[in-house]
Length: 365
Image 1: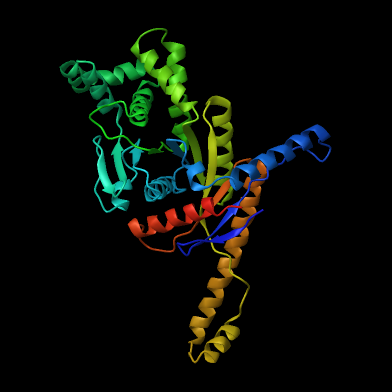
Image 2 (image 1 turned 180 degrees about the vertical axis):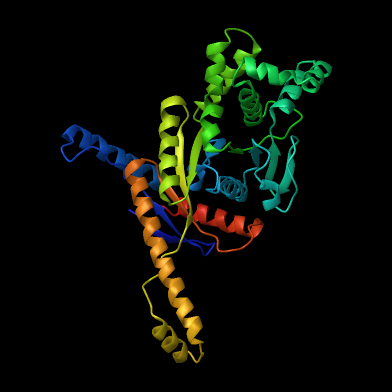
């Protein structure tokens, strides 16, 4: 089920409803077939009821994806969409090298929140900064700075694996809860999470701390983080592109999240989708059509246009096969986002992507 939508942004975008199927042989039992049908109906119900308010109801949106699939641009587009719906939105960078600031025409981000556009703020959350702030809030400012200067955190991180991730997630929890009087409160928080390889470790770090540390504030912080990740106010979205390896990696990430993390999965954004060329056309037809419009086209240009159209058709067919494969392998609603055919990617292109995202969500039947 894949309706084509053209919204106010003028971007044609499709929404593919995932139809999960069993990977078993044709002899699969009736019971398994019944379960698969139920999951299909549930996926369709999710996308049918997903208007913008429903989609943005969770206050924390964690965006995951392998490197190169556009995780950061999708995070930025999600923030723009939320802000344009009237929600003050914060984007949290977790690795400090995503280039998110440059997309908005700004420099690198800092630990302190910085306004990027109307309704949009951003910050980079580093473990050291989160530790200093945490200890300062508990009356230990001088001691916390000494810890950072002497690199004690590195030794602690070696002794207690996952402590850095818990510090970052603990700060995100504080931001979501709006519990620090000195900082702004946000309706929506978007986390541009670490690349998918580290993301699973990132999200399971709190559980590891709870198992390793029996008492004390570190354990309490980890328990709070687990509570946030498992709450209805948190949702995890995946990002992929319609190619074989990224699709495989997205499915593996989703399975790992379900097995090891108690968070709720939202949608999978399929980024970089080519438009559907209507039909093949030869160079002679292009020249003939051009003459009919009173335009003379160089034969070499007509040949180039024929080749470009053929490439678009082939590319669309390849991507479509991967989207269908993804639907069979993963029971999450897909939201297809268009390939942006621009050499540079900035604020204008981000708004185009946000418009396509909003149209896909609010226009889904």
